[in-house]
Image (cartoon, rainbow, N blue to C red):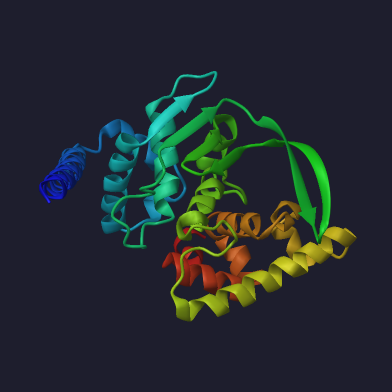
Length: 278
């Protein structure tokens, strides 16, 4: 009995110590975050975001909200340069477009699970097996970015060029759309949704994905699907990332040619980009 009682006391003590350390760690994290949130949004930061085609079209409230998110993002993620030195411009532009996607999603900290952003100067060559309509092929191609687990890869030459002009493409938006897709634990083209909205999302996005996939296989009669391009047919996750790019970069065209798709994205991101950014 004495042995078992002593063992119980030891286990209880260890448990208490563990939870105490856990609470202290959470307290420290909150204290650090509170200090970070007090940091000013500097003139240098303002000069960077002011050059983007999106920032000046936001409301004052949204600008202030985005500024706070950028401060938190840049001070809580590790930025690693490969073949270049990381600058404030790099950090701010990546944070700006990453957090723009979540500006109306009522998420306190942008991408809590994300730890590292790796920045390359130019596109990176990789090999990958891809499926087109059930046909698998091993391909070698250049990538401008990549998202995996708790890390995002961005190539700076393309990212910088796309950040200051409205184009169809934006590598930062694309890669962080993948991060959003993975927030429910799967990267499948379906981001975290209310249960009541799941069927509508899947029916519309998969309908357009399958239509695009058929066109890519035939390589003819592209019509309105030129707006999305062949890369969006790689899989459902890439389709979601590409249409997110179009939603923020060429919203008027997306709304005109794919009104149902646009409505689903507007409902998810809670922002009417066609009205705001066109």
